[in-house]
Length: 239
Image 1 (cartoon, rainbow, N blue to C red):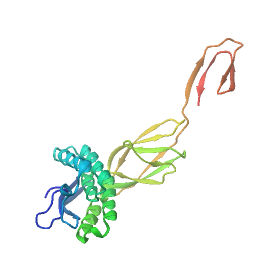
Image 2 (cartoon, helix red, strand yellow):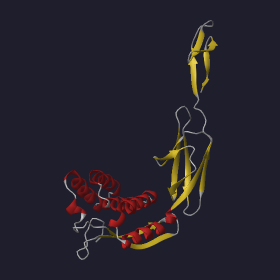
Image 3 (cartoon, helix red, strand yellow):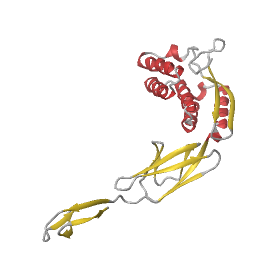
Image 4 (tube, rainbow, N blue to C red):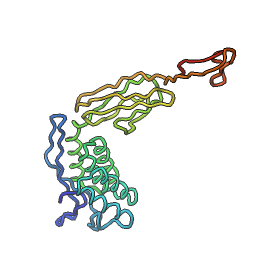
């Protein structure tokens, strides 16, 4: 069977073979067979889910088979929110893997194992462990040395934390780190992450500066934010 929703006719479990490739580094993983836990009655996801969850799940399958993995993630996630069926986490993880979102995929696999508890067989746990080991070199710890506290740190649009932020796991490859804080100048910093090699993002976040020009008479007092700023015309920078 080629995807997590497909049921094995012999064992009643769901299986999936994955090939993980990462062109950015010397990384290759052979196919993985992953069997996700079946319910006690042996029913597959397509047989178990009902109502809106089933509708979202079916849409996710169609999108997956058409190669639209990003949209498939949205549908499988919606099905999970409706049903809380733990098996859907592997479906989502598989789509994230195909999108080269290895940090997200690894987090989902860990969540799958943690939530599944005793319902997940030892073989399935070993398969999850193997997946995590194989994809370990596809992510790397990135340290952040940002001068200002309370700065929102995002990587490719996804928020990873707020300063003070020691580090975060980032997928290998090229990224853009965005730093934002109200009243401060936003920054976009290019970042290249190489698997197994740490990286550090250093930045000094400074207050945003604006420019104000006020036409006034020579005897007019100008106040800014309730404070006296100048007498007569004003032209200058403001924090």
